[in-house]
Length: 471
Ligand code: BGP
Image (cartoon, rainbow, N blue to C red):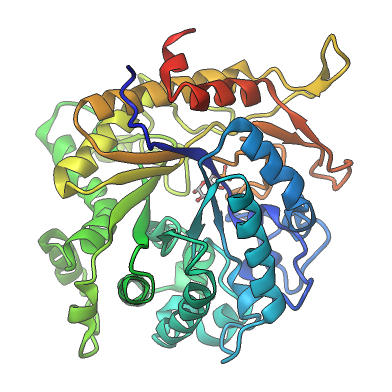
């Protein structure tokens, strides 16, 4: 018998803005992604431009039936996607939702249920309506809580019988590193004061707790989780100064999960704010709202990093939105993200030691350049052994953590079908089990092809993880 529990939720994850396309169909308003053709580092555009891969994405909006069928063939128990806020409230500040937007997700969730796949829905995944960014400066403005609440009530009401698992904000801590993409904050990052940034964080945290409260009231059986970007920080050397530096860097991320699980700001965060002249404005009632804590903690995991107190060694590596000092013992992906399967066991234990509530790995995977080839039967495919190795190594560490006693609800690989990258807006950075014929110059048939990893993952799910131990 393997270690994975019988009801383990195997599946895959995507986000609306990275695959749906149809950016202006059926009443959808613009989201911040529609003016980010180059990802987080490139310049924004005034209007959507043709070189923005997300406008078409992989055309999931029109092809989701074919894609869900392929997920079902792999045996998915769960499919994580997000709702595009601007399909439901095109500007973000209307009072009535857009019926056609609501209908799309009704159809999508029905299609999942047709195959016994449970939807896992991220309420806000890097797709704030553009109008809310431009008109209100995103989460810096307290009015966002009201708009988010309206959105959340509309989708809870509509999908309460179809969706059981909800995540309030994707990688909520990423607002520290990508304030526009993560928090819809229009003020350029280099002009944004720490005071405003932390006030925006507070607004999101209150909104998240409020969504948890409302969700529990409206949907008694629902499970509502937070979602954080996890990147465990190791000390670069055994020097106590490096150990403390690593602890402090880790705290920056852990704070977000701490607040969601414990219902209040941790002392170390209050200290940071005090010493940096940051004073969050709490409205009456905020403290009470924050006490609505989550049912589980979900997180993305791609890499770990190091920290050091040595001013001479502060050179940063590239990585998932943040990235730290590179670890000299690890190799990296083609995009410079350091690969560390054991870090996943470490972070699962770290979260579980801290919270003792169920954990859900909702993103993990390898972004790589894939080569479409024709096999001996004449089928197009990708021999992505590198992806299989990456996923196997990580899943074996999940198994270790389960043996350690960690309660893990499920695992959804990132980009189970190729999607447009969040950080670089490219399609050539592929994560999927399913290859999508679309290139960064906009060419391609949009046809789907099963990669080698498709059958591999199918077998992992079928054997509930037992096949992982066979090479
Ligand atoms: C996470 C995001 C995803 C996603 C993933 C991979 O940070 O939640 O939206 O895309 O990372 O990152 P990228 O697409 O930049 O390779």
